[in-house]
Amino acid sequence: MGTVFEKTEINGMELKNRLVRSATWEGMCDQDGRPTRKLADCYAGLAKGAVGLIISSYTYVRRDGKQFPGQMGIYTDDFAAEMMALTAAVHDHGGKICMQLVHAGGQTSAKIIGSRPVAPSEVTVMQFPETPAKLSHEDIADIIRLFGAGAARAREYGFDAVQLHAAHGYLINQFLSPLTNLRNDDFGGTPEKRRRFLMEVYRSVRDAVGNDFPLLAKLNIADNLEGGLEPDDGIEAAKALDQVGIDAIEVSAGTPSSGDLSPVRPGIAKREQEAYNLPLACRTKSSVACPVMVVGGIRSLEVVEEIIGRKDADYVAMSRPFIREPSLALRWQGGNRERAACISCNGCFKPGLKEGGIYCVIDRMERENKEFSM
Image (cartoon, rainbow, N blue to C red; front, top):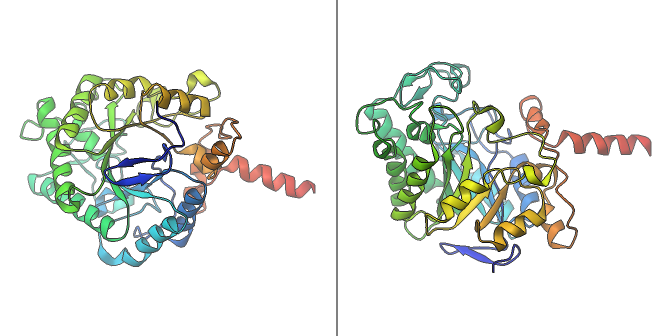
């Protein structure tokens, strides 16, 4: 039976435990996507806190794939020095870091990217701020190529792995979803054709980094949205990735339009509310041979131990708890088994827009009140 705090390997990448910092947006990069020292310090804090694997901010591979201000980019060689400083900050504290690669597709706006957004189809849906332009075959080929180019840079700059963001309504997920992919060519019309973009991105990245470098995917198994990706097709996508050699799959679900079933759910206050993607992860685990990670509202060490002990998943990923407590893994390993302090209020993202970096507003307020009362 596996345990949480044991060493494991993913395609030669040794991890000190089975806890993963799932990707998020930190808002700590310059306007052009260049990472700052503030972001390097953020990742260093997670490494010092003994997180087994740090998955970076979702990092756009082409300029029109950016969604938010302060988002990290990997579309140019110009950021090499800052990227290497970032990975060194993690490695100096014994950590491992994986770059997540993304294109936002229709989930961005002309205000952010300076041009009309692009997507598989010219379709008006709730998750898109505006109606995007349909991608041409030439643009599709270019984006596929740039995923590979971004991955090659990541390896060169010292990242220990890369992850494809194929979830949460972003471009790869948009191709997988019958709601946002209305194409009737080689990239749409059937579930297999809707998977083609994902598989070609995988091949581009694998060719760029080689078989000896860990390549992961964050995959929606379901969009939790009427007309969107259903679990049967999500599982088929997971199986297709597994068959070609993906090194691990992080199971997620939902889009910004999924209401109460969105990827980032508020108010995770009870144990029974935790691990809301676990049923999909269990189904994925029984369908693939590669390691499976599960993300979604996990807050208790007991829940983590049960997931790992039952082999429902091989790794447990969290994001918001590590925003409030970068040293959560170290605390749990040291014997303090108290539940993560995160109250799932989602207030941590507001400072990213207003102050150039996310942080836990509750923790900040409590510390300031304590200092004021002293």
